[in-house]
Amino acid sequence: MSHHRITQAIRIRTDRTAEKEHSSPLFLTSSFCYDDAEEMRAAFADEIDANIYSRFSNPSVQEFIDRMCALEGAEAGFATASGMAAVVGSFLSFLKKGDHLLSCSSIFGSTHTVITKYLPKFGIEYTYVPAGDQTAWEAAIRPNTKMIYLETPTNPGLDIIDLEVAGLLARRHNLLLNVDNCFATPIGQTPIQYGADLVVHSATKWLDGQGRVLGGIVVGKKELIHEIYLFCRSTGPALSPFNAWVLSRSLETLDVRMERHAGNALYIAQKLEGHPAIASLRYPLLPSHPQHEIAKKQMLNGGGILCFELKGGLDAGRTFLNKLKMLSMTANLGDTRSIASHPASTTHAKLSPEERAAVGITPGLIRISVGLEHRDDILQDIIQALK
Ligand SMILES: *Cc1c(COP(=O)(O)O)cnc(C)c1O
Image (cartoon, rainbow, N blue to C red; front, side, top):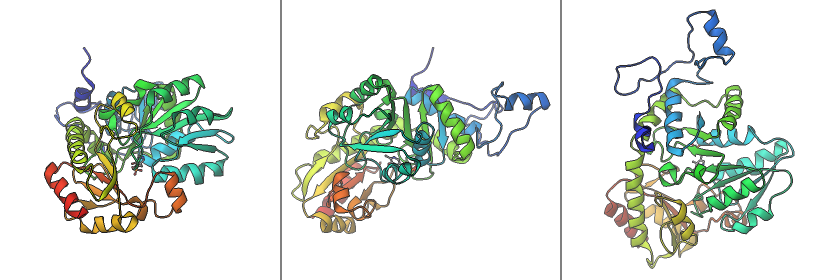
């Protein structure tokens, strides 16, 4: 009998040596020993399933991978030092000179930089499609298109892309579908179920959920992950065993944490909607969200992020941050502590106003990462800062 994926995220043990510890031991070692020359030869020849060197594999890292595979319904995975290392690994393992990548305009800032600044240096072309426009995707496919890369919900605009439509499109045109599932987490949605070949995560965010470690992971089809493994074992973005050990403990509480994060976020979104200082507010599970029907179809909860546009624009955004008494002003998201950010003056300040508009960042946009504090304390702090 196989257990529910939530149970697996708590119970999976990967280590081969320890037996009696109730909590998994931490394998803080850079390499592994063999009984004899024959065993070492077989390990290097890939004839036996043995650890060699922690840039390739490590039992603490493998436990995090196995638990994530259970949560995402994936065959295999490779864990990396950060979410960006996972994104870049998932690109460079498959894209080569002359290939074309299809993505959506509102994606994470550093991913945008990789796609627009670094991939073209290696002759890899890209086209951005507006996230909310399902029909534009198919029209943008070219003979040399190799991969569709998308985020849903997008960061920070919370656009929702129909994963079922994207999965069918990828199958029809024989493309790799690569989904950044950072915002929803596997508790909120499982893109593989809709045909995603690869799912990438910044484990730094909700997966850790406590703002402690950087980490990333790619999960997906076994033969694709093997390509990523070969690329990463040579290029070296390995996840630290310590961070992996922390992240495996974090996954044991992911389900209960996300339930509360999403519950708090929905409550606060409902209370703030219609506030006189707010021009518009977005949360995937509010009926007012432009892609609410898609969100309802593919998301088990709405996640822990909400965003709103202040009527006063850029100045109002900065004033709002200055007036907050409890919410943290920090770059991270997905923490036990609620966080407010103003992308136009921080993460996206280097873009021109036109570029910002193209990626859905308006001057007064505020993003709230809703934490685990009492929901009324979070709400009250936001309301007093809106005055
Ligand atoms: C933070 C983030 C990343 C990058 O992750 P790091 O761990 O910071 O490298 C990628 N995608 C999304 C949606 C993110 O929010």
